[in-house]
Length: 388
Image (cartoon, rainbow, N blue to C red; front, side, top):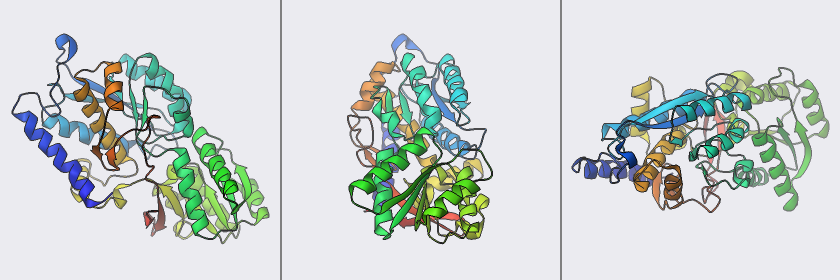
């Protein structure tokens, strides 16, 4: 995202705040709330706070809270304050369903969470039955889209869009054969299979092996042996960083010299800690915008860092935008009624986000995926190629 788009996000928020402050309806005011309820409008967020992906949860929770505080500081929405309610999904389906039911019981009006697709998928009917719109900032398996559910909106690129970016980079690197490695979860397998299909359709590079690993293990030597036996010159891991770090380390220990790339679920500095600095150096990643790759976001990063004592991480900008979008939809709906908020989301046209002006496709996804290629340099992910 260029500096002009970042500026648009900030100038729009400032302008709306000044406009509404004078009319007594607060930031994003302008509608009436049914029933005259003046209590807080609750937003629900499911993120991993425990388990192997727990490192991501605080980034998303903090960024969402930053957006809530900024909006409340300018008067709230429809004359009411926003309140963020957070539940742990542990990147686990059963835990996520329990968390979703908890949030429904607590009266949330919009869901703004969802990191692991495998944990997010089983919550769709929970929120759907309660008529609660879902703005999903991170989870992006194509299975979330293919159900064509009216209450589900994705503001991260889809699995299909990520696979397209992966194919483009693998081809650009001149790879001859590719090992596609996944963990059999909805998100991970979806990207690997779609990448294989795209590579096959375009006539190469060939898929040397489609290898599935078992999550949460410590020894992947059998999988590494299978990969090495096929002698690929490119490996694409589509799972999460805990297993990804181990696989990278064990590939290098086994003597693999070729290129390695990971999917967006592995974009965390933790992967370099797990793999080891030398093994992780030069590893590529398919990823949408991160705070480090956003040009012109210095003020936002500084505000986040000042408030929480450390810089924002992966999916913090998407979580921040999910709250802003929820507030915009409630304002435009003039109500927290689920059906009205869903209609307002479908009608969004040009809402300024970090990823650019928003207009949903008929499938409630971004019109462009925004995937780019990152690379690990000295333990941190940096922009390698914007794929423009």
